[in-house]
Length: 86
Image 1 (cartoon, rainbow, N blue to C red):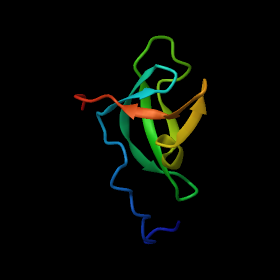
Image 2 (tube, helix red, strand yellow):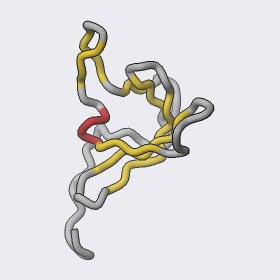
Image 3 (tube, rainbow, N blue to C red):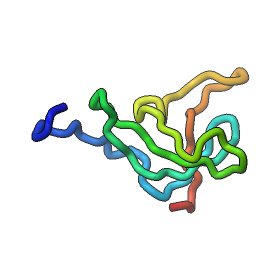
Image 4 (cartoon, rainbow, N blue to C red):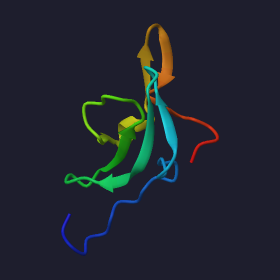
């Protein structure tokens, strides 16, 4: 993307800053925001809400954020919003 190029449309269901999500393996993460990466794809920027994390912030492509996956014989979302948080 060059300066002045149109920015790809952010999906309406993208996570919002301040929301808390639970990873399918159980850890909680707070959304910092959504950013456009160097390949013109949206990425979720989030921080772990647990001690001794490998990094203070993480990113994940938005396309992967809400994808469904198979884990321990169950179909589930990679991240699920924790209701009541924002």
